Length: 186
Image 1 (cartoon, rainbow, N blue to C red):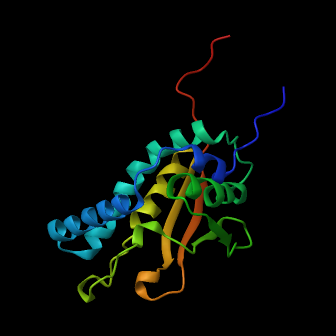
Image 2: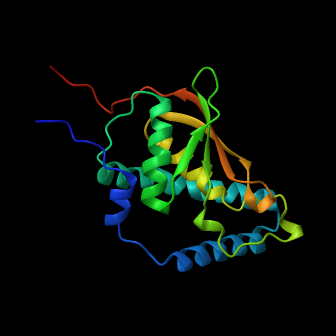
Image 3: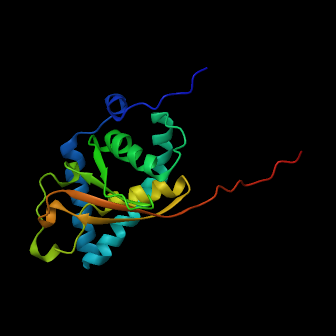
């Protein structure tokens, strides 16, 4: 029997239940607005959005693996490509490009030309330190941690801050060896 071929992001996106994009965008905006009201400090909101994303990511990876038929990636480079081409397409309906690799192959950038979270968004002057889409960095970090990759994910460029694209830098800190909860008795 031939191994299962990973489904493309387009094929998965076509078969996934979706919510209205405007409802999704406005709901996310309401969450960010409420965090700004409750926490008052932009840095605290950034941390909270990252933590929320992390909690989503550690659960989202199960759905991703179940629906995408992706097998274990051989290295971090392949993992980044799968996130960019399949993961982002599956859950956000957009793809990202993977660029800016370092010489060790442990750090790259995911560049989103389109980001559905920022439709209808303009940041006021009081929120200039806000990484509005910081939830995405947490999602990527949480999902990668569940597949044994400890990473640091940060925003490098943000169109809401006047940049030309949305760029997430993903840095592999260490590959965590898998630990099994028990030993086989033979």
